[in-house]
Length: 150
Image 1 (cartoon, helix red, strand yellow):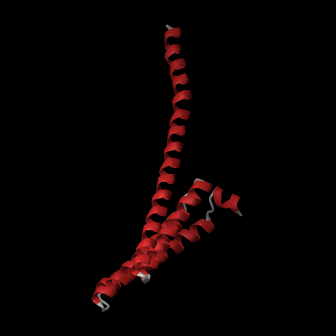
Image 2: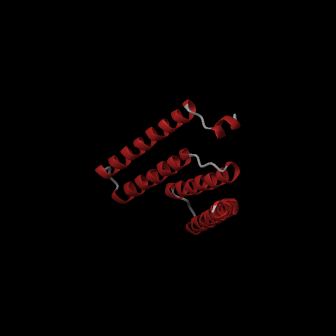
């Protein structure tokens, strides 16, 4: 009876030794393929935006901010490829740029400051404060990755 109880345990151990590395490999492959697709889509979208700017013969502030958004997405993909770590700061910068672009769009359409602009400005203030908290936390409590970069 002891042999029968040990066999499933031995089989289970062999299965775990095979499945866990296989699962980790598949997750890693998915991450890299997804990052590559995001990077290609970012370059494609930025290229399309630049082509539209050339067709208009000028670039607006909104167009330039859109290019900054593409640049920040590209930087996030590059950092993740190199370090396998996604800095939250870049997501906050991306959000601040997107909200700024939205404020400019609202002001261009309405040609006046409104409560909507005030709320969007408040959102930027909250995001800037969140960035301050993240920066302070990463300074005060550095991760292993931050220690290795210094």
